[in-house]
Image (cartoon, rainbow, N blue to C red; front, side, top):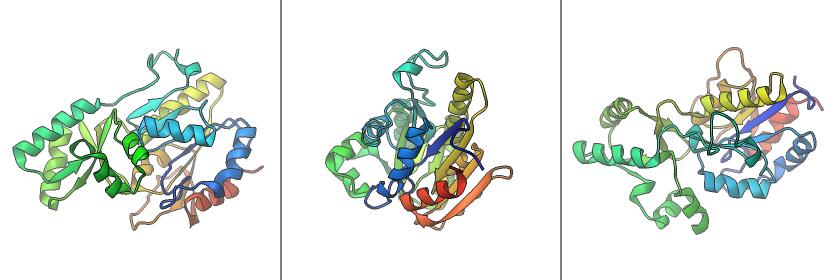
Length: 269
């Protein structure tokens, strides 16, 4: 089991993991957040949320000096002190620009009459209805840079065709808790976790020990890219397979209670 004084990096999903799926509360995990902060262990928020949403949460969680992974891995945000990294002059790595994704989606819908709606098709009130977010948070969720959440209303045959045409445009679908996310084919939480782990190892001069915590299908890549994986019990019936070679713990508790349970089990204080 890892120790706090190992070169630890914690990657965590938000909704249904660090944050309660319904209330978005994280208080059951606060003690561990304090412990990790005191030990200078970075907690990297790894989420489908936008950079604007994550920046707000980082302020509330006091994680502003830590990188983050947004839009399901299509976007990596780096703090100011990381900006000189040779792989990123802007602090972000983008799989595909939002405008390009929207262009493809609109073209496919017009050509094949596919039945779906994305954030770019609706106003803030519709996003509120879909997500339950307050107005200001819904506006932040609409500030997308590298992915588009959609709700599919068509049949399964059309969905297969839709996915095939996306692949031809070098785009891919990732399943989240509420939405399908369209993003660059090479982007994802797994590649983003690996990239940041390599960065941390390079900066420290030694390998990192990575812990990932997540509850949904879009977290599987992140869990597979880590040394230790905590599969938090989810409010869904999706299978959560994790590849061999990863140390896996599956929680009994949901959300931040499960987050705490996972770290209680894994980390030797």
